[in-house]
Length: 209
Image (tube, rainbow, N blue to C red; front, side, top):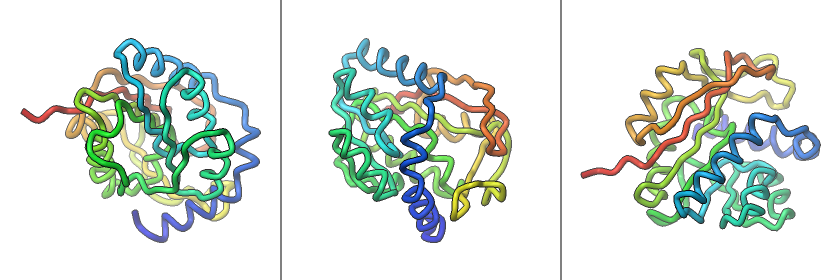
């Protein structure tokens, strides 16, 4: 990841742990993770990587559902907050995952990859695919629907954060280079970031024959 973007993200999220811990859970987020947990159980999947796990709110939910959860995040303070929830939590960059091939049955990434420059998405998706078991599941949740890349000037966080948004077509296109798309749908949202809607995608690891 671009080092300036990385440092700004770390600094911004290190300052916002209390705010994010106190944030009311978005109903659609709760529904998405409930559906993903059910799908994992139906498929007999157990190990889950929460990529961009923030303070561990989603990770704790999945662990309480009986899954074996590992959380990663760029922010050291987020990692501490997740560890305080009795989760295995590691400071790590999603573009450089420090795991062996085929380590996880599934990967959950909610509101994380949108902070990557578009030039780094292929690397992140390749890493996520690499650490997945054959036929492993990947859930990606990001804001988008429009074509945008850069600092959000109205961002209340300091430093202001970098965002990249994809149109629905382009997001599905780049994901299809690495995964088999199982489901794609969108949600309207009142989020203040300059996105059209929220994009929710469930994928399977693309098997190379």
